[in-house]
Image (tube, rainbow, N blue to C red; front, side, top):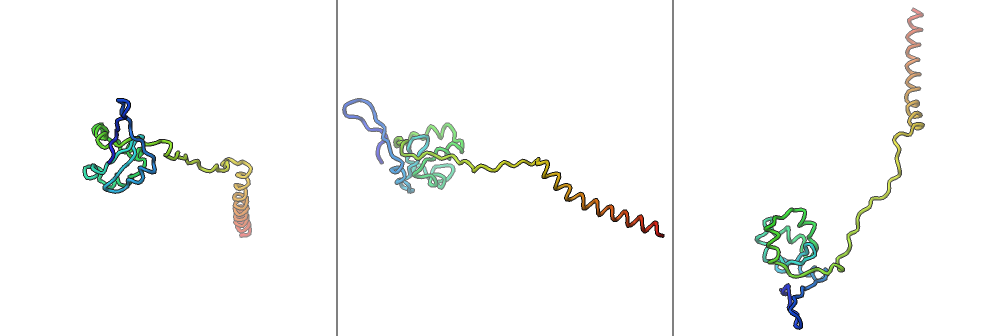
Length: 147
């Protein structure tokens, strides 16, 4: 495991290791388990056994950006504070592909109140029904008149 910070020879500054996504993706085993949370790279291999959500949760996002999964769970401030123990470095954000937002295809506009079509459909149902009713009434009336 590399150290998260390295000292520059000419200055007293500490420089953070920066990793490409392809490099983080190589660390995807139980013994070497790296993941990305909020642009920071963590090696959580030593934490797998202690993770309250079981090791499968971490192994499912090994070698990739786990920010969304991490934030969805709602970790405590204690959990967030202990993350620095597993810090390895930063992710080179230019190596992370941009997420494409799904845009559903446009649906044709559907107007439920198509008055002309609606009236025609009602008349197609009511006119035969009225003719049938009128026929039954005439039949009953003529039968009663002939008796």
